[in-house]
Amino acid sequence: MNILFKVIAVVSLLLLPLSISMWHKSNNYPQEFRTDITLYKSLWVSLTNGCCVLELLSMPTKVASKSEHLEPLSFDPRPEQRSIYFSSHKHGIYRTTWVVFPFWLSTSLLTIMGTVPIARGPVRQWWRKRHGHCLECGYNLEGNRSGRCSECGTQCQRRRKVVTRRKTVASR
Image 1 (cartoon, rainbow, N blue to C red):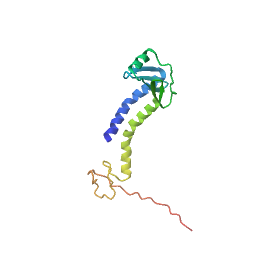
Image 2 (cartoon, rainbow, N blue to C red):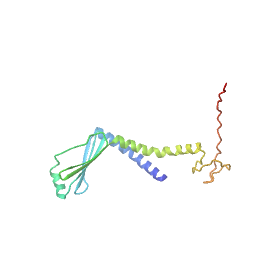
Image 3 (cartoon, rainbow, N blue to C red):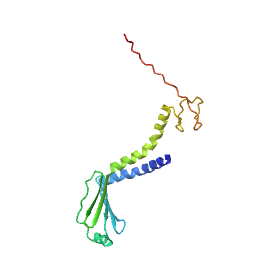
Image 4 (cartoon, rainbow, N blue to C red):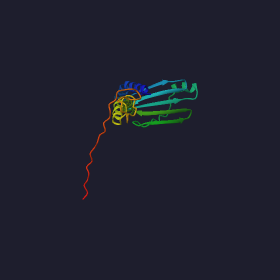
């Protein structure tokens, strides 16, 4: 499980510059792409105003796919920009499905997924040290007098009990 977190962190940190550049490109140079996935489905990708709009057009037959190339659809119910949106709409024999997400959201998620596993190690070490656990394996060392972890054998420092002096209020 630990290796999975590290792989996710590395992949997300590698994808982070791509997300940032797409965010920049969508604001300064809006673009629209179209590709046919199958004879029955085509995908429109629109990068505008800091958002990515994925529009999947499904058609019932191959003939509909060929006619769609010749005669574009007469309706264009585009979703509102700068929001998270998922919708599906049927118009006649065509079904259109939209997924809209802002690039700031994908950039934020990639940043969090990349930094959480990196910050997790020092936080875990601090917690283990504070609660008297072995720094290597996390075994509870409370009552251990040998100075070695009985689980993994690592040399451990004995935890000193901190004695706090309480102020006593003299009652008169």
